[in-house]
Length: 359
Image (cartoon, rainbow, N blue to C red; front, side, top):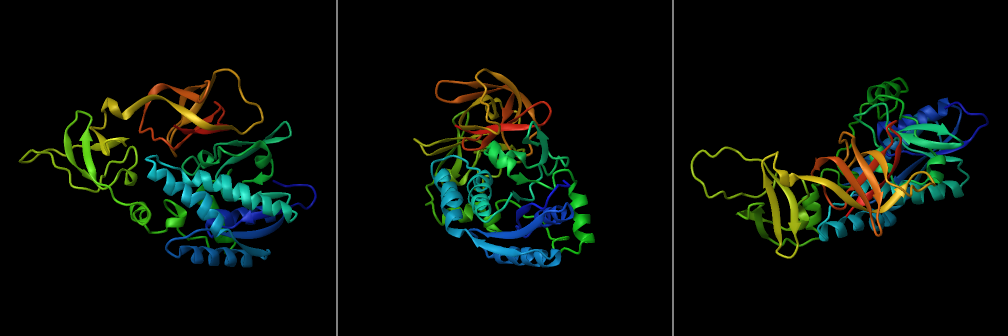
């Protein structure tokens, strides 16, 4: 990452260890670093704590620090999108939308207006140069790789971004933070959706979406209970959070039940019983809002490696352009396909080349 000439980088300091070490690594590489904490929408007040960690990290690093208030934009672009998606019975991906609209949208534009050469984040993604452009590859720490959430980026956005932590393991990042006496060195990683904090998704949605009970139905047509409302369930969910009535007595063995569909017309939640139930699997998906990180769009079927959920092992598939939507055909059936989630595709070498929304 050593560079010639002193270039200016605005680093998004989230208040976590990854972004603070990103700033540290950029300083060591000779960049002029400015720290920015994005104040987004927050439910339980943890955003104030994160802002303080970000400020203290900037203080240790002796870099300029700003807080940019983007609460209204975040609420409109990320939170409202998420609520609307759940109301319509699909499962959104707010992290993808946050990256698209806020971090690599509003934040990048404002940073460039203020003279930045680059922005940087603490995402775990490996960045390589090829033919004058940057390309994104799966991070060296496979357990932390975040390429899945960056498929909406354009080539121009990637060229203006830096991802310093991508070559390292999480344990190394912690060690760097400790040696630099960063206050985030031992701070726990955030879990789940950042703006919810310790508030559960179901409790959050109930503040915006009315409960609308209906039957829980197996793939065989048996009614085994009552759900609270289709909006509160996601495809692949096992723990339903309600009492299931089986109609049997005695010591019945525990049966795993998974949500596989939502019938909006009958307000029914469809579940499959057993982890190997054929109803859990799909042979392919249709995609909308397709994006390729390079400027070239293939006009023929291409063989890719893909994943349809975060941290899923890559699997081979064929990407085909149709008249209305793209189609991703799987070489082998895959479990738990949820409309609204992202399908992301890669080259055999691990380059993240694009993605789309499952419809």
